[in-house]
Length: 462
Image (cartoon, rainbow, N blue to C red; front, side, top):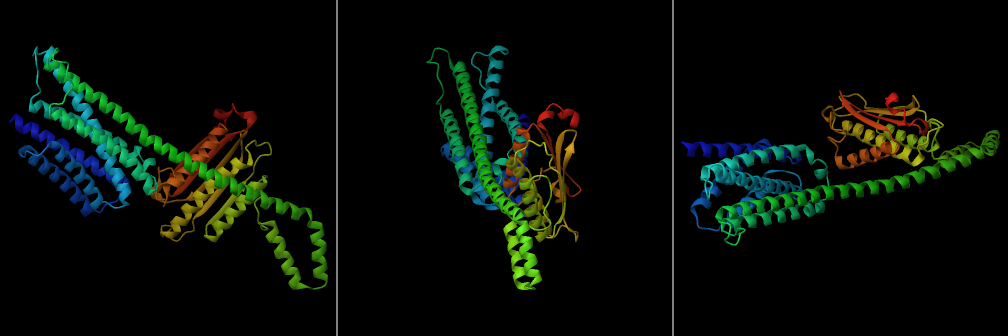
């Protein structure tokens, strides 16, 4: 009866583990319902079959460990969608997390159990029974399930549409760490343990060996964690740097455009005289060409935005043209305060990234037909509020994007996330605050930046 209960507990815990793995995979990969059922059934049945064969065959355990790994990776490659490299990374992370956490807690709880039997039960050389080992394995599996569940949302940035090469670079070291732990496990099963030199006895040899596994797995967990999140941070910094370079180039282009417009305004009196002369002589073709040349030289038309900042005016004009080309309703009322200390480049970062995301969100609504016949819109408001500059941008968005901070549904959410990071950097540089909200199909980003002489009024302003 006790044997049946312990086996049932292992089966129950392993079923929970399969559920957690399936949910984790669906978070970052795509799969049909039929393939999902096949994945669950094969993962459970395959593991049971491999364990039964391992129990009654004389083949080395390391072979079955390797077979388990390959079988798991093969199922994900065959049944899930997305690119192959990304599927390998998902499988590698799951294998690494499962191996490290399970081994650590099996060794840790085994140490505790041996200490209990030796000190409390007064057994000189205690050994764990098969039932006790199964109980420890079950507890460890529960902890693994909780860890996988916690990772479900915690690794979003790691899987944000990186390059195929990046996925492979991340996966290979994780699999190498797992291989080291697997070899150590196999060695322990063959009696390769830490020995005390024969002076302390088998009890202390067991304690030392389990302690060795605890230290090894903890160090491996730290190494794997630092590697994954460190590589992700490096990638984000490189992307941010790349975007900043593009924004600097765009900023210089805007300055050149504005300078051309300023030169045109400076010569406006002479241009008016020339135009009047063409008008009096009724040289209509020359008059038309002259006006077109003036428009091209100015680089922006009659409907330019008037915000109080020359670069923001040109930037808003360009984004407005793009929006109107895509049949997006454009509403803009921005007044940059004269005493605003935000430099023009940072203003371009704020307005440029926000409006690029807004235009793309509206265009996406039109492309997939989810706008239900109504035109998407972008509304920009910027003004002084209690000695702070308040910028609010609203735009149409997918209803399922709620609580996704603007990245869900995007063809390349990684780039959208980088844009938000650039915006956040600027806001924090000026001791401001940023808030993002999506409700009822409307995406809203609000930014409040205190002026230099009002840096301590932030709480009052909010």
